[in-house]
Length: 130
Image (tube, rainbow, N blue to C red):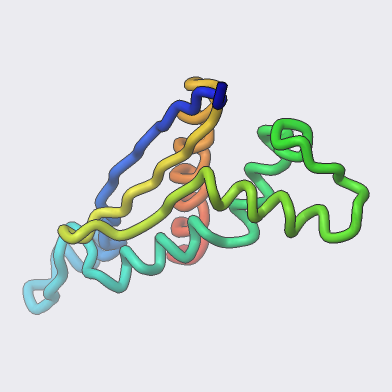
């Protein structure tokens, strides 16, 4: 029998950093949207697919062990990332929202992984807008 996999999904709308900037709110000539445009969605997707996020997932969820990849073999990280990418999806939806999906044999782990990706995207976004 094939193993059972659980999917956890997160859908969110990237916000525009200008929408919470008091200087922009008081400026009558400023023009911005509360939710971001397509470029911001693409930026968040790139963050979610970054090496930083992959390494965070590898260490936090012990993915070498979880996916049965020997961590000392040549190209072990590449093999692990290829396995990870089969279980993770990050894409833009037609309405501009960002869709994050994680599959795992444990439902809780799938949810934790999807939420960890979104949290790290938010951390990275906050770092770049300071």
